[in-house]
Image 1 (cartoon, rainbow, N blue to C red):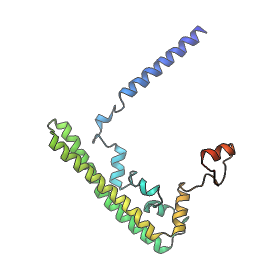
Image 2 (cartoon, rainbow, N blue to C red):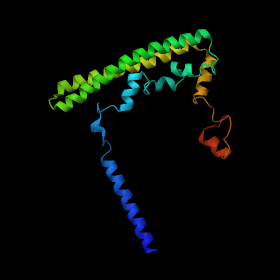
Image 3 (cartoon, helix red, strand yellow):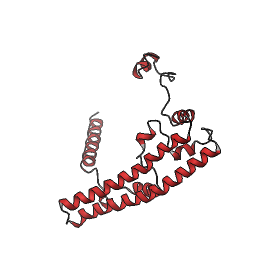
Image 4 (cartoon, helix red, strand yellow):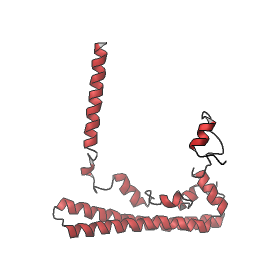
Length: 194
């Protein structure tokens, strides 16, 4: 019994030390990044024109994204015209996003280099931050503005279906999943009036 207690105490101590080390070193390894504020995956996504999560305010509030509309073309029953318009919108968005993404990477690289050089002053820092944030804003506009375009292409039923297919519009009050207490489910999902 004593051996078991000692073993458990040693494991708890080891886990606590490992957790403490991790909490004091959350950026360990980041110093080797090409650009401190961007991971390799971030850079890859930016160079590919991916959304990078910048359009979530549109996506999660009923403004479908061109890439996902095209992925769901069959389920949304897009007409040939709708599909062509979405493809054109997506291609222009992708090209713009790649160009703007490269500008953001370059701006973040300059900011990073400013600190590496050790010669940064407050005025230079402010200019570098403004350039990086302007690049991010331009990139975000590219993505968000194309979500606006989809509402001119899709009809209301397709927008509703898109939200349902993407998992945003499911009515939690319509059915209670197996294994859940019905009263508790309805209370947690505020299904009082339904």
